[in-house]
Image (cartoon, rainbow over all chains, first blue to last red):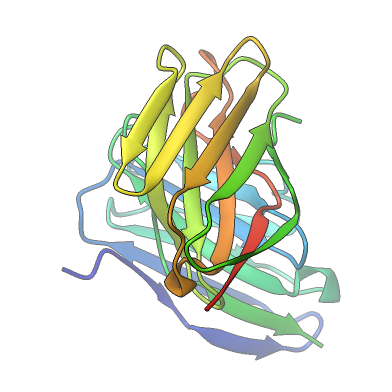
Length: 114
Length: 113
């Protein structure tokens, strides 16, 4: 009964490098989300998906790409990492998008770009 | 932005006291949710209140919603040291934007034993 699993938990990147963050959920949730959390700020939505094969932009999508090839996985890619992308990234999933159910969050990925 | 804003930013109380946190938002909503985040961890869903509800309870938690004032409050009664965490409200974007939630910057609650 894992819920939402994020890998890796920590990563240090050099400016310009690329990487992919993986989010996996085992609850058969349709909706999945990627947020970033910066000190003193709330969570900001990067991208989200309302079902397998679909993705949409959130509030801060620039510099990120996503893919949802399988219902249980939602990948977040950084094409060319920048120091401004240093943050904690959270993945979340929910059963129905109408907010009738709360989000289930992963434990986060702490990314540092140097 | 639809983002909710919590008030106060930080709150320090003694164990056994009640803690009240407020959330204000800007546009109409379908639902409002409250989450807790312990240091270094992910967010945990506490309670959801729909726009047609005025009050909801869950254990020691009481949430109220006033859609006319576009505000909500979270009351934690008889607080415990284990309640020390950051608390966030999250609002959806209303009828045409219901499938994503916007989070405020949170209230940091410290419960002293």
